[in-house]
Image (cartoon, rainbow, N blue to C red; front, side, top):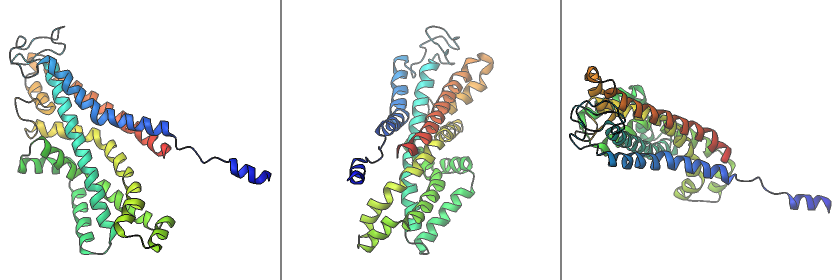
Length: 283
């Protein structure tokens, strides 16, 4: 009786809902709240308004980061450009995650087929060419808008997480619960949705969140070459380029966009590293 009582009172291990909630809040802040906040914080400073201040005005209470050659508020423009850059990087993460799960699953679902061989060849080709070189080349050829830039960066960034999904799918196929479901005659789509997808979704998500700082710098690099947002819409890369060319007129011209880009990269890296430590412990 004592043995039965001890087994009956034994509780299953907790699911750690607090850590799951912390992870969801951190993801929401990074991917949604931060880019939206940057955009709305820039609006009161009228980043597109000409002659709002004197040309090349020094940093002051009215213009904390100074103004450019047209008298536009640099703080407002840097905040708007930072919000757009983060939104493009977030779009690239979401599109890369979707493509990684799709193509990685197709590559490993039926190994040895022509479809699997083609997808593996494309993934290896994308990984052969340096990331920034491929992104700049494709953007220069297709000249996409901001949404197109996000999709293009997502395609280029999806190669490594797709290989991760493919390897994870091969590992999960030999698990006992999957073997039992196959023996019970579960159809392939039900098997993929219930047994594979929950396991395959998380590794590429963590990988791409860790890649977010690099995506921010790639977006800035594309706009530096004139391949991102077009004037009068501000972009961090173009503001840095113009500021460096006019640095003799004021040190604040390149410093404002560089400061915003540095804060975004450090914040994205901090949140992504925090999530990498938190999410596995919450599962």
